[in-house]
Image (cartoon, rainbow, N blue to C red; front, side, top):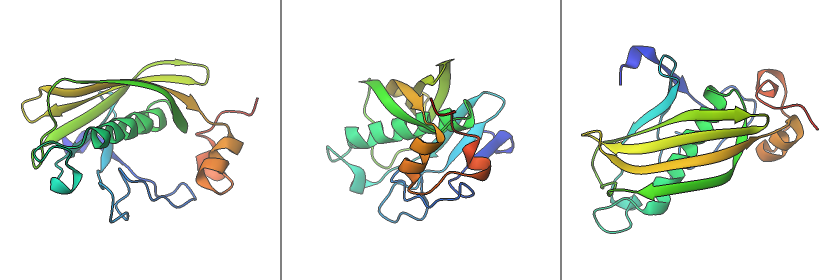
Length: 168
């Protein structure tokens, strides 16, 4: 990744606390994966390497952990690219090769389509040789301000409200 064209994505500044398992650096039990918006490519990307604490088989990252990473990168794509807070409503994934413990991997996501409140996303985890390990496609539904407030546990106001849809 070329760092100079990447914009860091963080939960700071939304007006509510986050303890996200995948991305939050303050969650000591989490993965703490830093995501970035590649503005030029219109992708959300992150590099990661996970140790044995996140294994399924001794040398492979647990499949559920890989799915959590894919879900998170696609959620960030909904925020950074589509400009919406959204939740997963449907997802499919395909495991093509193992995500190995203590090896470098990249995850990336992009928006396939936006249709009203529905955001269709795609993502993949690739190894250091850019070989696909896991692919995923998901449909996210964007949240209105009340739904976003319910998810965050606080009223959504200010800049964060711009990432919601109007109530129906």
